[in-house]
Amino acid sequence: MQPVEIRYATLDDLEAIRALYHAVTIQGTGIARRTEEVTDQYVRSFIKKSIERGIILVAQEAVNGLLVAEIHTCRMEPMVFSHVLSDLTVVVHPAFQEHGIGRQLFETLLKEVELRHPQILRIELVAKESNERALRFYEQLGFVKEGRFERRIASDGGGYEADIPMAWFNPAFKG
Image 1 (cartoon, rainbow, N blue to C red):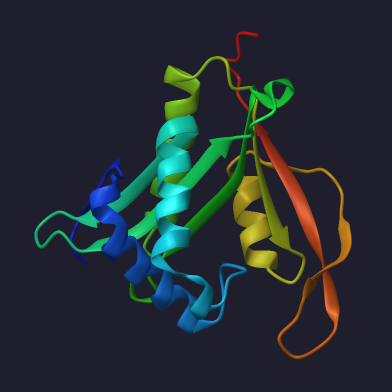
Image 2 (cartoon, helix red, strand yellow):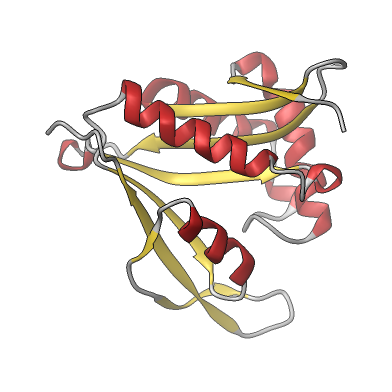
């Protein structure tokens, strides 16, 4: 595997990010969206929101420039939540999973918040209860479970499962 570079995303990355999301949704694990929901409008919307009110990073192969992973989060709009980054989503292309790229993205994001965003107290994410591997991974990064949203996720095979809200707290917060 080639080394990857992590950088901020721009709107110029829209097509590559959409293709990345399609690869992940086709695999059937990882994010809550289906392939047909990953439209240019959806991708453009979260890129713009993350650039304006949060952080969006991509991992790109250093040699050929292939975009292999993305992470984004943004501040919620009501001012009472201005210390919170929410709606965190991370995707790693199926062919590049198990190589530490997701960890690199998360660690870069958390370090970015720590060093450059002292006004951010917490970062929130939600993971479905059956994704035990992801839940353990998030805990290793310092996220803590904060409860359960019972029967929130409709499973493809029928039935429902809980979503697990988690948060990471910025040790450099200056409120």
